[in-house]
Image (cartoon, rainbow, N blue to C red):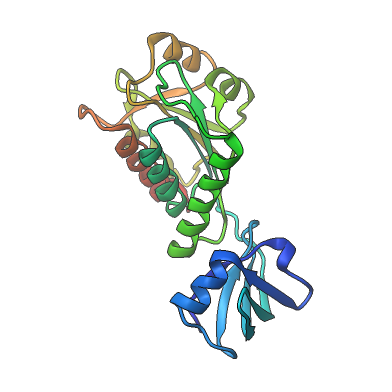
Length: 246
C-alpha cells in the first residue's frame, strides 16, 4: 500500500481513468519521482479517495487508471470555525491547522475590530485558502475537505447559523471550555454540530458579545491566560475534536 497522496480535480476524473496536471503532476513526477506502474492515492474536492496506478507520465500531465474508490468519510461531529479575519500569515496558519484538526467548515468573519482589509480580489484570496486546505489535507491524510467561503459580516453569520451547539470564545466571561466538553463526553451525548466563534486580535467589543449571546451562543473561556487569537482558536478546536468527535 502506498502513502503518497495527491489532490485531483473532479473534472479530471473519468469512469476508470484520471489525469493529474498542474502542481500535483509536477509534485508526483519531479518531487515524489513516481514511476509508471506505481500506485498512489488521490482525493478530490468532495473528499472521495481513489487508489490509482500510474499509466504514463507526460510533460504536462500524468495519466492513471483507477483501481479502487472510497466514498468521503464525513466526521461524526460537524465543527465550524467562525474566525475573525486577522493578518494573512496568521489566518493562513489557522486554516491549515484547523484542516488538520478535522473541522468541517471555516467561516472568515468581519468584526468591528477587524483591521485587515482584503486588498486582492476575493476570488484570488479564496483560491489561496482552498489551496492551503488541500495541502494540509494531503499532508495529514484528512479525506474530508472543509468548506471555506468569502468573509461574511458577524451579524449575518449569527442570524443564519443553525449548529446544535454555539460557542463564543471570550476573554471576559463564560465557563471553562473543558468544563463543558468533559461532562458531555462522559455522558456520551456530544452535539452533532458545533460553531466556535473566535474574535480578532483586538477582541470582541462589548456590543458584539451581547449581540452574540442574545442569539443563543454560550460564552466559554480558556482560563486566565491572554492568548493570541490563533493560539486560542487552535487550542479550542483541538479540545473540541478530542472530547466530542467520537
